[in-house]
Image (cartoon, rainbow, N blue to C red; front, side, top):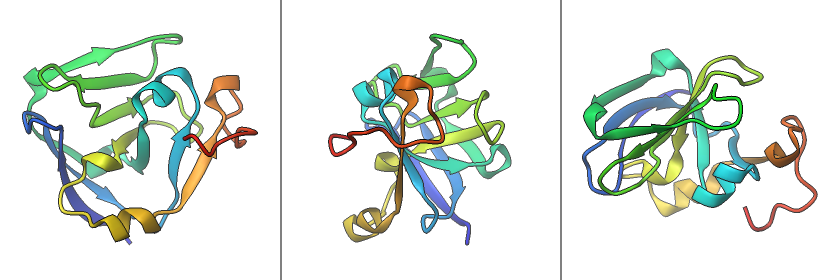
Length: 133
């Protein structure tokens, strides 16, 4: 069931709301950017995401195919969300679960995780080793 969650970057300059179902799988990926930023993603549909504040505080990073947008706060460096334009499900907003406000440790620990082998472009498969993700 979709629930509306609020979230922000570390300094609070970027604030958003996202409609998420935290009983559905989240994602941990071993691609170069997700591994380096420890990005833990819950998927929101574009209509289920609202940027409330901080558009001017965001900086965009594009790499490789330059199709997926990685947004970081210019002030604190936190990657609160990204836009996947080239994904198996079409456009989606990847919400960093670590950026959700007022979500308990117990709730975070209960969110199912699917591991994705983005490093080898095997998006439907788990990597051979994922304990570090």
